[in-house]
Structure formats: structure tokens, C-alpha cells
Image 1 (cartoon, rainbow, N blue to C red):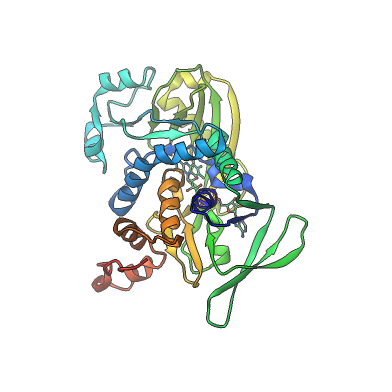
Image 2: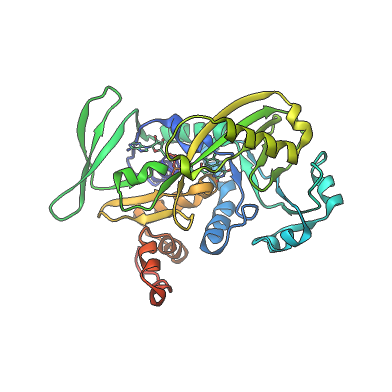
Length: 371
Ligand SMILES: Cc1cc2nc3c(=O)[nH]c(=O)nc-3n(C[C@H](O)[C@H](O)[C@H](O)COP(=O)(O)OP(=O)(O)OC[C@H]3O[C@@H](n4cnc5c(N)ncnc54)[C@H](O)[C@@H]3O)c2cc1C
């Protein structure tokens, strides 16, 4: 989010500085890179946000590729969701957006699919991007080309406000361990799963995910397979990314676990038995920024001058393009369009307080006329 928003603001002519504690811990490097609002079975406003973002991805990627001179590995390859029964398939929340597959159709789409999957849905509109090896690097390069300043190894430790409550600066520790104050009247907080450490009122908690990859033959698998609990994402060169565990109880506990890695191997064997023989490449883990409704917190935050782009949970790669657009509009001189204002309103950070206040407040208030 930090890179996507920095790039957008720089394109809009702003001077941007990115303060980053550790780039390698970002979930942006960890993710499988699925662009999957339909395969994930999203619903309500989150589905709408995901669909809007998916529409924008090709132009967003083209702009990053043009600025960076690097490819992002976008692959509009479609995603197949296999099911244990036709009834399960037909009850899937996004079934109406997919193409119905029987066993013969599944075998056509996924040669070598494990037994035990008699039904499926093909979401040809969903896809993937090679976030770990390509998109994140291209985004960094695009930011540098657009004049964004980076301070890597720099942890923001506290936000500072003036007497009126307006953001006045941040206290930070730099890569050499020195602490100092940086004045700032405007900032966007995009600290992923760690966001509530700076603003404890944000309802964001980590959900750990473990991953692994294998090297398959090129073209062995054309589509992403999104199984229950395990998914397989084939990159252009045959690398197969296998994800992911979902471990809310792990908190910020680092590292791989035998149980987590076993779960991935078992899921892999059920979905694509032949892939269990492919050579292993990498294993890694990271933290999804979870919110109570699994949607992000976007727009104005609880401190004047502080904007939010956090809590994207399982869909932050998908949602990066719309997030950058919305924050760019909210912070930019032109202001937001009616659609952008509606989306910002639906994902405002304090929507949960309104929901828990009782049945009479369940209808959200109308969207404000100005951003
Ligand atoms: C296993 C796994 C699989 C996933 N698969 C997908 C997928 O297929 N498709 C999809 O769309 N999404 C996926 N996601 C979700 C996606 O990765 C996240 O939603 C997204 O990366 C969140 O972006 P972010 O910028 O908010 O957080 P991050 O990418 O985690 O970045 C946060 C950054 O903030 C920095 N930071 C934190 N605190 C501070 C501080 N105090 N000072 C300075 N810097 C700080 C961190 O060092 C980090 O670099 C997956 C996530 C995981 C973990």
C-alpha cells in the first residue's frame, strides 16, 4: 500500500517520503498474488471494491511498467475453484459470476487434478500477478523514477499531534538506531498487520500465513487452482506457489512450523498429485492485516492529517490499485468523484463502532458530500 500510494501521489506531483521499517517483512512480498475477488467468494462492499480494483489493474500495471521499465508478471489466467459436490458449488457466494464445470470440464481446465473434486467454477476474469519477484520491485523502481524518497530500516515509533489535535510529526528510529522527530502535517499510515501498534484504536490484527513453492515444468498448469484451504498459483516460468495457512492464534510469531508446512503438502497432494514430486524451491511466511469484516480501512483517520490505507487482509495485492486511486483522490487537489467518495465512506475506519452500537444503527449514514 505504501508503495502504491507513494507512486500515485508522486504521479500527481506530490513530494513523497516513504518510511519503511523492513521491506522484506511486508506481506506484499509474501502474498501469492492472486487477483481473485470472485474465486475468493467475496460479498457485499468488499466484492464491489475488489471488482473495481480488478478492472483497474491492467492500466495500473502498465503505468508501473512504463515508469520502472520492469515487468510486473501480470497473468490474466483465470482461476478454477474445485468443490466436493455440486451442492457446494451452487451455494458458493460468487457462483453467479463463474462458469459451471462438471468433472469433465474440470479435467479439461486442470489436467491432472486430484480425484475427489466432481464439480467446479471457472472465474476466467480473475488472475494473478508475480508480486514477490516482480511487482514489488517494479513498484519500488517506479517510485524512485518519480522522485519518491525512501528511508529503509526506519521505524515510526509514535505519532505526534499539536494542541488542536492535528498531526504535527512522527518520532522515528532510523537504520543506525538514532531517534529523531520528523515534522509532518500529512501522512498515510500503511503499516499492514502492525498498524494498531501506532494507533491502538484500529481494529487490525495479524493472521499468519505460511507458503512454499515448487518448480514445475513450464505450462504444466495454466490456471490458478483455489481449493478449500490450499491454492496453487502457477507463474509463467513454471514456478508453483502453494498457499496458505491461516493462523490467527499465532499472533506475530515468526517462522515456519511442521504442522503448517504439512498442511500445505497435504492440500497440494489433494489438488494436483503429480506436483508433490516437483522439486521444492522456497518456504516463507508473513502476516495478513485482518479486520473484523475483512475489508480495509481507507481514507481519513482518527487524527486530523493522518490518512489510512490498512487492513487489506487476504486481498491487498488485488486492492492495491483501487487503494492508490482512492487515497490519491482523497489527498489530491481535484478531490474524489461520487463513486470514490462512496467507496471511501463504505471503508471508513470507524464503521465497526456504528455496527456494534445496536440494531437501530445498522444502516450506514449517507455518504458525505465532500471527501
Ligand atoms: C500468506 C499470504 C498470502 C496472501 N495472498 C494474497 C493474494 O493471493 N492476493 C492478494 O490480493 N493478497 C494476498 N495477501 C494479502 C496481502 O499480502 C496484504 O493484504 C497486503 O500485502 C497488505 O499490504 P500493506 O501494505 O497493508 O502491508 P505490508 O505489505 O505488510 O506492508 C507493511 C509495511 O509496513 C512496515 N511497517 C510496519 N510498521 C511500521 C512502522 N512502525 N514504521 C515503519 N514501517 C512500518 C513494514 O515493515 C512493512 O514493510 C496475502 C497475504 C499473506 C500473508
